[in-house]
Image (tube, rainbow, N blue to C red):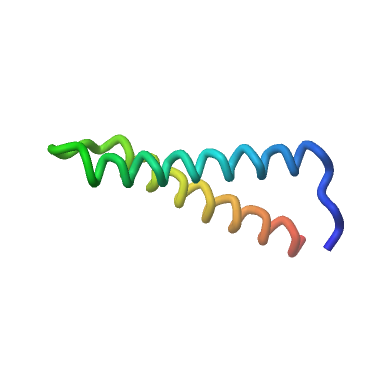
Length: 64
């Protein structure tokens, strides 16, 4: 695989940090916070939607 340029590597690192923080926040809320909050599940859902939309977009762009 071709080595990614610095911007792509920085984006991957930022995304990794975002996922780790989101996972930590999810665990913290599950263990320590009582009550239902939709912020974290909404962020997970948004992340999944963006991932699959991007995947579909780039797969379609490669085929043309």
